[in-house]
Image 1 (cartoon, one colour):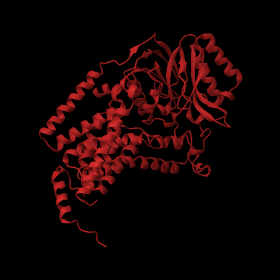
Image 2: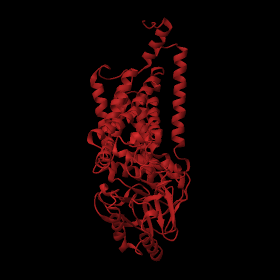
Image 3: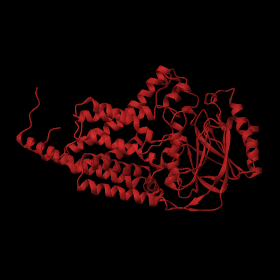
Image 4: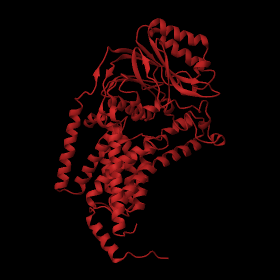
Length: 529
């Protein structure tokens, strides 16, 4: 049965809408070259992030996607958004293959399939973003085009960082940590940076497609907030307190493959102890990374535990070490344990699905060794936990993946004077993942204006200042000790006080308004979908 043809009123309304839409300087919309451009634009976007960090690409590529999406059909917008997302994540996040294949005891074909499933799922976010944006702009006039593309982009970055525990990798704001816009991070957080990046990309798109008074005004506006961002980098929201702490990070760089080898567990324990021996009494803090020990603390030899506890108390040096903690038969956690005058423990709150816990039935875990590894059933720590007290200072702790969630880290602030993080990036070998992760960790230091101590198993271990800049760092896969000083700070940045609420609240409000307007115009004009 043929669909009903639009009546005269619908045709007139559609004609008015068509006239109000911008005329796109583009290839024919049916051209397959637009699909190719979308895919390669996505594949090129990770170059804007660490380790290459050519951040101008994060302005140019969204502008290209706006050019492709404007006036597109719903089906084409979804397809091109998906191709863009697939290209972005297959280049920027397919390092999960290394963890699954090399260290997860999974065959290459199965690892390839699982990696493609992961990338294919993530690509749905840009696809749905494009679909929603184009649907809204079908019923709104040309003046709504850029505001819609801007707020919907940030909305879907936020949704990706929240849905199913979240995966906020490759959010545009992270690539601008070394740009003039970085001055906004302590005020608006990383999503605020993404918003400003997309506004700039929209201005470039406007400059490319039309040159009128509105375009000139938009470019002046964008230039202004870039200048303000540079000025904000000279502003301090926090201040120094107390004297600096001397720190030593032990990077043993032991092979990841030995992590769960029963014959190697004691060797790993002894390596960390021996490397730490010259440091007792010489520094305020010795830090070992996440899973430095791969045995439950209660199951470690009592003589080993007593030696460490005694050395920490007698020397006056605090030891922070990462290890599993609890009871293997009931509940156990990925934890940071503090030994010294003020002992304590922090249990990881934000676990990695399919890494630290597997939300699948037992029979499905057997399909891939990666899902059935030792200690793959960690429990989440309580949402509210006390600070770790290290050398008299309150610390805001995080373990590995947790530092990707600034909204959770600020639970410990402004009381905490330093950030402390233990990570294990050995899972991802020589890929871009450790560099991307370090860029994310630096953003947390910048948002909170707190210096960061970050210990990793095989690198990159770092000390980061309150501006997000590296003070000292190690090389990857190098057995070494990183020594330096960190300065405790007090006070609160606007981001610490308000978190993501101002930016995400604004985005949700605008999306709601645009959606209501689109539905109203569609209904009042009786426009077909």
